[in-house]
Length: 192
Image (cartoon, rainbow, N blue to C red):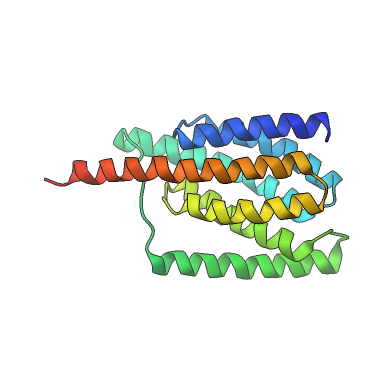
């Protein structure tokens, strides 16, 4: 456990908490957390996670822009549902890309757990995209992904980060519950 890991954990918790509260600053805080974790994961030879954190920084910029534009256009960010067909298509595409990425990591790097690392990276990107689009399903995907991350980080002896991801599972559940309530309220407001 390093000082960098401790700081990254604290900033990450703040970022997810702000996301649950739908505060646009979540994207800035998450950007900083990703920057710190990119360096940490590189040091631990989790190259898929390093690339993921770099992509997350781009997604943080996209998410900030998406939420800011939506707020300006409608004065409210509407939580949306995702059709099962679209959800399945996006999951299959993400997992396919994760497999290609994992095989690439196996071939060209000394990655520690390339296939798992790459799959989790791909699914995390999908979950982040869903978050930027305000899809309620994002929280359920985060629960699954974060549980798998816990195991990987324990295996890599990143115990504080593993504990963070246990906390992320709890926060994802709370996020799902909070966004579900808001979605119901939004649905009731639309009905005559």
